[in-house]
View 1 (tube, helix red, strand yellow):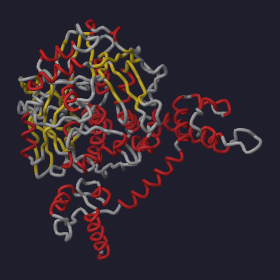
View 2 (cartoon, helix red, strand yellow):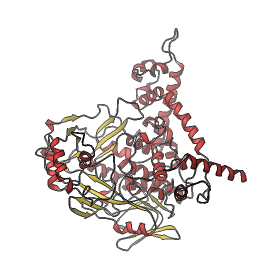
View 3 (cartoon, rainbow, N blue to C red):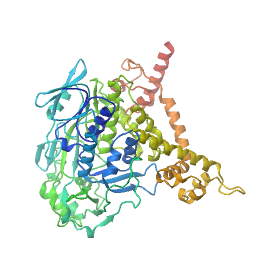
View 4 (cartoon, one colour):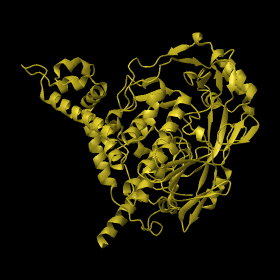
Length: 606
């Protein structure tokens, strides 16, 4: 078998990567152990959140799949931080788990040029430093010029519950130990990480009437501009309860039985999505912790208790659940567990997500040290697009930090590496006001169009919206609230904190302002104009200061004035610009000065 590109793994990263390759006319194979698990939501059946929702919108602007899948299968939509500014608001939806994966599978099945191959990849075949193919566990060879590795938590995966250890990357599934060994043989630096999931509870055993209702938005906002009609499915109510002092007592009394605290697990878990035992131990001053009770689907009999991820033994999990109000008589259908797995140190790839040591090998998702469906999907799209460009003889694709959260994530991973599974936050972006969800298409759609990932109707819809906003903004800036006196312009009036676009809609002769997509965009642009202008100027200054290129063959090790540690780090990471060098952990102002002077001298000699 021979293909232009091979994607290893059918999770959220693999799905986006395979779709990009196929849409760009390349013969593509997606290799997965189980085609029915493609697009599976292994943990929480939800998409989006603060920063994550922005990323999903960016994926849509670039022509990706996730936003449309979420809109088509969402059963509750909420805008988080709705009372705050657009920069820190976050679209989030609760999805129907089963319908989500079926929708994704159907979308991939409709693509010409994409073949699903069931099997386990056991090793990578490399010749003269370049990928030549993948070898399946049964011995079959798939030849290819590019591999996108999106193996999730399966590389050397081990599942933990109390004293029990089971090989696997997900409950009931295999562990890709052979593939992990193959990466070691190629010299790729592996790190050990950890994640986990809570138990699943039978819906008919939950006392919802004792819990606080969590309603969705009455007029929900979709992730994708292309979603129409919306919402597609009936909307449901989630619920909120809390752990108790008894919960904490149970955990403290059994903490020695936790593989996390007993020393069995050595991998580092996500700090911002801790297990319930982590919460109790590390935050003893918190008497209770929130538990969101979320349905897994319209027809599902299971409930996802978001907030009590654990790897404690079965009997302790029973006690924990029964100590929570509303879950006193709950029946556990599937117990929670932790999974420890191998990932590749992300500093081993360049900004195209191609491995420096192996040409044609790209990494995406949890295998690159991230956590979360959204981060995985974004990296899958990014890696897929870069692999497709390399296969077509085109230059690598690159976004800058002031252009997209996707660029912030890629640059963070490549330049700084990870100490724990990487999760995207708005605070990671220096110019987050420029990256609000409303401007995603303005910032990124041209790239999706260039890649051929946006259809003609999609391009027309995006262009029409941008044209409407430009026209309305010009009218607001040039029209006064009243025709006499020193009346403010409509733009100045709308910029006031308590004024909304709805209140001035009758004064604006454009019906497009009645479209929520246009109205929210206009309101955001007017109210944030001054702040955005300042951040744009800051971004330009940073770009000018950091854009000095560093030659690929520049000798850091022989540079006088650099410490051995910093020189070694620079040799390892090979920053392309002064700006990238500045973001490397441990870099000092003195070292940057030495580097700038050396580069200036080199340019002078040239």
